[in-house]
Image (cartoon, rainbow, N blue to C red; front, side, top):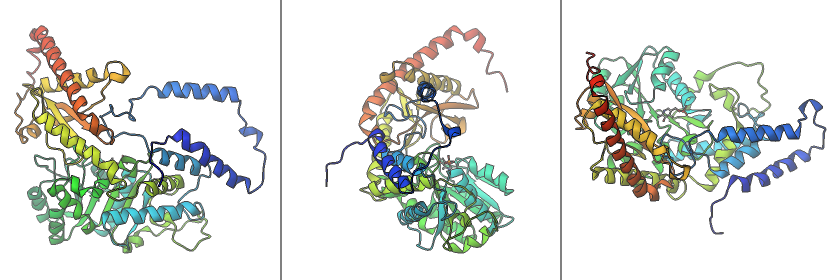
Length: 481
Ligand SMILES: *Cc1c(COP(=O)(O)O)cnc(C)c1O
């Protein structure tokens, strides 16, 4: 095998584009209609302006960007997507996307194998985790009519919102000191008989917390309730149980016992946006999808994705990009697992550095690759001001020196259950949150930690100086009941 090396999209795209042009040429030439002609100079100037405008972005691609869940797709995905988009297949029907429908089936089989679902699953790619969750909750409503959905209070806001869309009441279950669904509180609600479906989040969007799925499953069985696993962010951590704490690994191992799963290849699967997936552990749910459409062109009698999905048109290019990516990075420990594991180790390493810091302290221990931490300050209001100042100061320097972080809003009780006692002079405060989702983060953590400590020290000093000069005005501020 040839030596592996970094490849760029610029290197890959022209070659695969000319392969697509060659396919097109086999059908004979035709003239592009004059209405579609463009002025090359005009196009050049538009592209110049496009590049200038795109310069206004945080550098998601760079290891020094350790803020939100953002990173670019792999060049293999970019090239495969671009090439396929030239033909623009639509995976709504087999006729709309013959080759890409087959590719989608292959990637779904691979996702199903990663999670340990049975081969008799039903599922498909989606445009997003949101639509994937909507679909899972819609099926849940059909199977458990007139019942409510329970999700943790730290779950993605999409669950309560989609409950509104579907006309299904949703109930937020409190979380424990690691941001996980509280089993006692869940059982109390289950005893009322109101719940039809539990949503377990494996990898919450805020903290990367892992709900106790292995313990939720027997409860769900006892109360005859469905279990939907939202692992839009965390799904691919199923590849690296060896890097997870035993407890988190135990909950990942329970995924095969759930009724449905959502995972977002556009988060940790190296894909461009527009690639989520929903999987059901039971094909009999197909009855809920019945529809009649005079528009659809079903030349093939095989099953079309349009027959088993809420969305209609859907990019075949997404399936092709994921297919190509998984050919190069298979869903194994040695394949994509090697891309996921460094971020998890980076979060552990940063947690241990922050645990020993005199300036910073951890909010909680990370379970995946999301790490939340805060400056050591006295009060809620000071915490909020200092966190925001760290966020701004770390990014406010020359580009190569910048560190990009994110903030996360917490309440005083949430800090208190984690043993962090601050003067309660504000209802909520921002803390720091870093999503370490790029493998390049791992070697950078010691330096990043040093930078963040330095900025934190300066932010604390600056905010205290500011506070001192503003004392007479500020003294009245907290007086608000
Ligand atoms: C990102 C995310 C969603 C929403 O998915 P989109 O792809 O952004 O629509 C839902 N649940 C969880 C846990 C997520 O992390």
